[in-house]
Image (cartoon, rainbow, N blue to C red):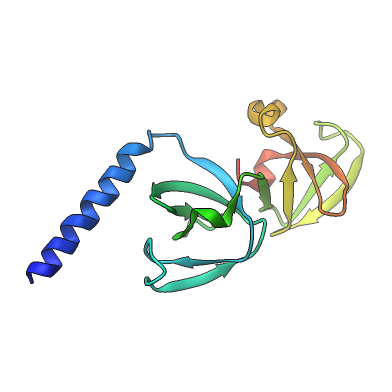
Length: 156
């Protein structure tokens, strides 16, 4: 019983410290650099939950040493090792069929359409912070690029 109390105290202290280190609203997005096993706790001894594929965008919620608690597009939370992430920004298409246009306007010519769950690279994330009237510039892995509405993707 005493060991359980010590472990519980350590866990609460570690999580509280990590939470305090991340100011409110300072969540960041990044992508998985390589296929990564996600766990229910910040340790390889924790229960593995699933494998996330390369380039999947995630939102970093908590940092604890070399581990990050991340949120995926479905809202699920899990832990993975920090070394498995890339600073490259990607977005996940959430619309059934998203339109990518050659300018940030609904009347601009269509470049291509992307189906739900397609991953797109966010071009120039710093410039896209303002979301140009609800649009961001993206690139498909085949090289095509254009503008997509922010309400058709997750990862911003």
